[in-house]
Image (cartoon, rainbow, N blue to C red; front, side, top):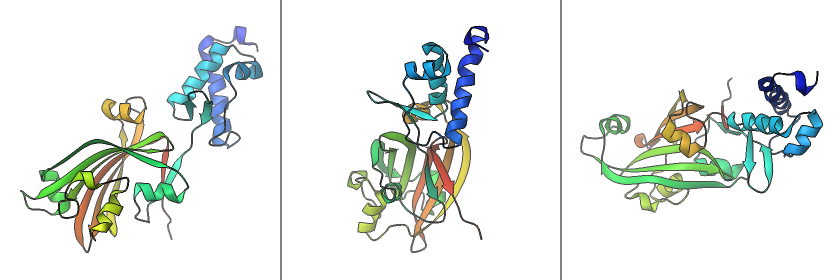
Length: 235
């Protein structure tokens, strides 16, 4: 059947689904460059408009990423083991990847009721807060909001890339943690930071980190569901 007799809406979706199957089967592996619009159109006997819409469909689903001046590439997915307590920076470094953090907001103040409960603090206890956008190889992956007891982190300005390394220098690095994973729909404000459409699937990770049996860290991280996997080993 030629493109001329296939409904316009179906053309790009058919091409998009074919590309999805190739991505899911690793025929198009993560990091692979997709053919340019014109080449893709010629390969499949469709118009450039159809090829462009198919690529945009994949981009909206988080399956490909467009790099200015370089082209369109199959997006990489990142995985993190649930059984090992590491920082975001350490986890990426172990994979030979470059992590990056951008501070969205930071403050020093009194613990909120939620923080009092999570960290086992008194109602007027001082805490340090830092909210960051976490990226890997230039791609936004998570928004991380962390509250730390004041004696473990006196001011957010002390943090470079790794919060855990900063806490380690004070002898208060978390050595164990309790985590909860919740599926969420990413809200508009978060979606703008993560470069996804509002309502896209995400993972909310709530973690309380302990040092010498004392809660010292309370973190809420919202991860892009299309870029991050959590893995656990069962026995």
